[in-house]
Length: 194
Image (cartoon, rainbow, N blue to C red; front, side):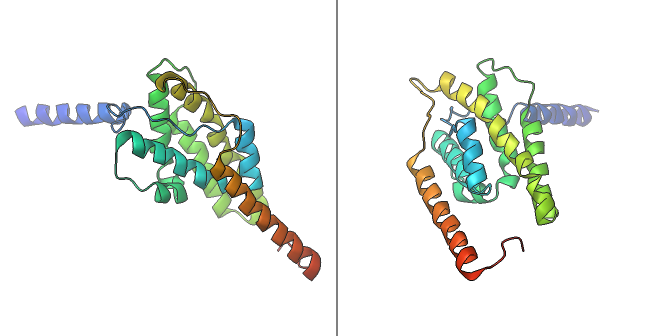
């Protein structure tokens, strides 16, 4: 009987750790990468939703700096579907430590992101276009708790309003890509709707 009670106590402790964001309870506050929602929407649209790679990379780099951990920010940026829940959980935990009020949760944000991501990859190209906003909504909604967390955890923090140097570089790359697509379509008469 004693081992049974000991086992239940261990499970209760484990359950509490998972609900309290086990990896972020004692971790220092990160200065998360905040992108104003309108700018985020523009960047996601202009870059065909690939801006999220940069955004996830920058946020995992912030976590890595704050926790002095050995995580691969690049892999977490390229494969966000596997790691988005832990990032969203850290953000919400950090914001809730300062009484951030929201009806949304990290689980719901993860659901939106993963459902949109899977729909984009499972449906044909025309139908997938309808689901781009679903995958992006979670990234737009997470900006509020990021801003709240940064304002309360980082002394002297001011939310940015413009583009970072990395975003400018990203936009230049996509502008060249769009110009190349336009050149090919115009001069070679290729159909883009294939």
